[in-house]
Image (cartoon, rainbow over all chains, first blue to last red; front, top):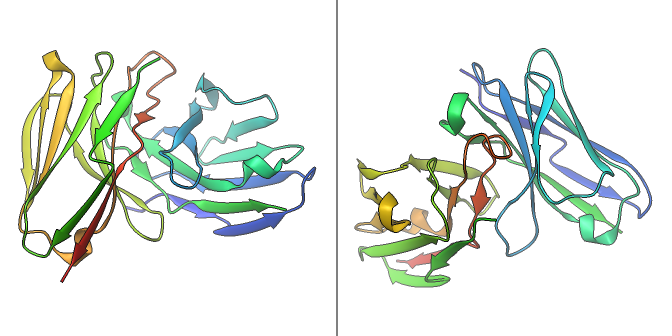
Length: 112
Length: 111
């Protein structure tokens, strides 16, 4: 049984650029969620995908978008990067009902 | 939306001490979970505990759903217990199974 893997682990981008973060879900999980964690804060829900459809969205602007693929892996895309987008981005996969929430190690994004 | 309050915000312990972390919710949740975030940022799921009591080694958790709080007990703490502890909950079928996190309790255990 493989866990949740995220890539890349670290990334530095310039304000205004676009970024794509990737996540492979745990075997047997069909739901993927993305969270943003600013320094010293708890993770904030960005959105969730279930069977390739967006299944809920937090309070994030449309420049945050995502995809889920048939193998349940997922991408998070952020356009027009802003300095405040600097954070740890966490991906989690889960089974039915939210049990078994498993997080990846995250991608640390720095926008300069 | 649901508000999650964790206390205390910071905790400093000597190795071997016991501690209790608390989590209060402003509304009912039914998929309450506790996580430990290690210094490298990885969130480890400790307990899925929408109600009742569970134990796993030196850790145990109790959720009283009717009173909207949960407690995490750490006994005989070790330096490897250091890190940030988060509780999180949500409501299935409202924004999927999105979790709302508290701000965490930062635990430092010294030898």
